[in-house]
Length: 125
Image (cartoon, rainbow, N blue to C red; front, side):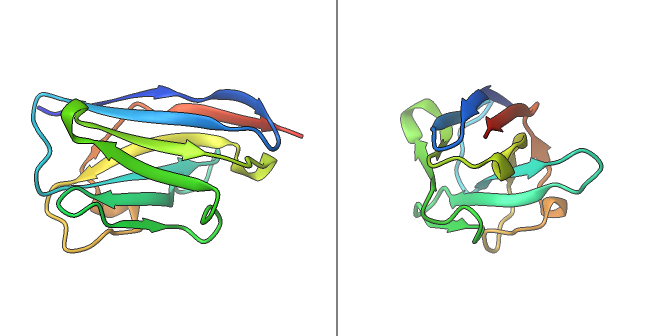
């Protein structure tokens, strides 16, 4: 069973930066899409960014485009989400997730079968 283990997050002032990490244990990524979602209390998880392992193709939600960067380190089997120019509206619990049979970088959480434990990101004004 593959485990996605998240690290990073925390409290930052508006305009600051944070980096989230998502490391996979138990297998090596091959044909997979890894994505980041975020969730506010009582709401569905919303797509933030995704990366395709085979060709480094990426896709971002409009709300984070130009501020967030998703990347991967093949040697560490880890995906990162670099978050810059953070806004209070970015406050949420962030999850990484894996889609092992991807046709594309999906934006619906329903297409992802494996999830990290979640990490809180709080941006103060």
